[in-house]
Image 1 (cartoon, helix red, strand yellow):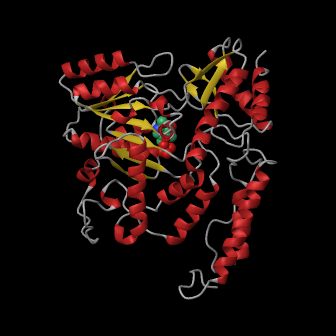
Image 2 (cartoon, rainbow, N blue to C red):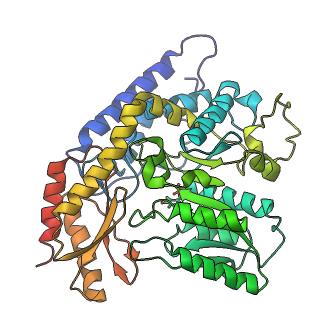
Image 3 (cartoon, rainbow, N blue to C red):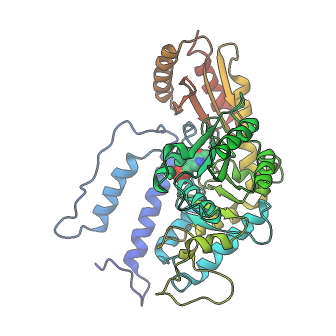
Length: 456
Ligand SMILES: *Cc1c(COP(=O)(O)O)cnc(C)c1O
């Protein structure tokens, strides 16, 4: 048995392995409804390679163990996080991507796929209104897109050697910005957190006063980060006002749209993101709502030259490319990179504009529906314009709400609903994310009933 596909003949062994694996995967999907979101228990296969390689049959059996122990995003009750089931075309995209094994580092290692990535990033930029000089690069996750954005912003501001330089975020910004602080070598004080209002949105007046304060201390700012879709409640910072502020003060505006940016793809939802087109950079994570198999994230910039001027090294071991384009490895932090945009492209093609609209609108409809069913005399509900909501009992103390959240999450899991339990403000909430297209209104009725009776 040759473990590499034959370059000469149709490799029957590969063909048979792929078709058996595909059919096991299809069965795994088919079983998901009767199982719950989480496995009750699981066994792991042997980790270390045996002396001799094992047969395909053994491999498939071992794979099955892992599949049995996997989280099941397609179960209708899988509502805990921003992890929807994958589009079928996106699964195929991932498979073909692995088979091609091209490398987005350089065009010569991925001729068609490098061009596809450039064109797809340009398409996203046009959709989000970023203008003629814009462009982008794919990254393995939103944390990396955010990191690259801030590295670029700091470099463009000429502050990469200033240990006191700061950037502004809201109190509800994503945890990735804490990591970024460490990675780019800044102290805690460089991350300036701006308070939020009762809707979870950055308070622009506080941004102004904090900015004046750091200026009076002789410090410089290299970026303001606005969040379009916060992680617990899906709030969107006031993008237009923040953009005006940034334009006036000549500061880079990065929009962390890992959750909300994707709503810019539909004319029916784009108005939620008013002002997004004035950003200098945007993180978008199609993995979080559209059903593109993980990972799928893009960093889009209003001026694509800023990517190459920050990251380009000359890539001395690859053939230069003609024209104004740069190799993929010259546009970001990652070197070798798989063609993650393949599954994004094929997923979008499969959906079409109507399919994209439907996913986005249905997610908001499900959130509104669930929200309407929750007893507001018992629960404080926090949400925004997107598909997330979180709730906590009104009358409970901090410790009572903690107990309630643990017990209710557990109880809901037994009923095959998986919610998450974020700590937000001063207490625990239960959070539901309505990005699962398999969740029907009847499921939500049942869920709301269970939640309402978790408090008497
Ligand atoms: C998920 C998320 C990120 C990080 O994306 P990863 O793909 O998990 O690295 C960044 N910002 C926000 C608002 C997010 O929700």
